Image (cartoon, rainbow, N blue to C red):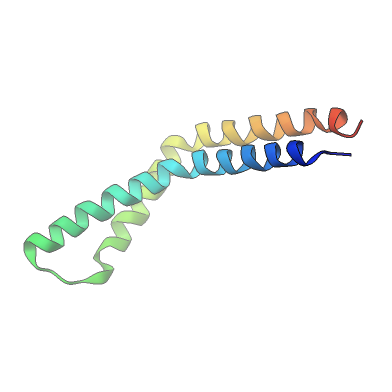
Amino acid sequence: MLSQTEILTIIRNAVYVVLMSSLPMLGVALVIGVLISIFQATTQINEQTLAFAPKIIGILLSLLIFGGWIISNLTDFTTDLYSSINAMLR
């Protein structure tokens, strides 16, 4: 049976992997959003839908660039989790 410490460690590692895997897309969306906001403030364009297309394109490009690294992180976590199942059940 798993102890509470082991369960919390697995959950902490899972949350860490999810945050690290989503960080490139979130960072790109944040930078693009700030740049579009600065552009809108300087030109006084108040179009709320202006940022959607550049953000989607930026997120897809960052997914293409960092996709291998994200999959590597996820597979490493899954492999570690599956390899430790036998030890956890003892």
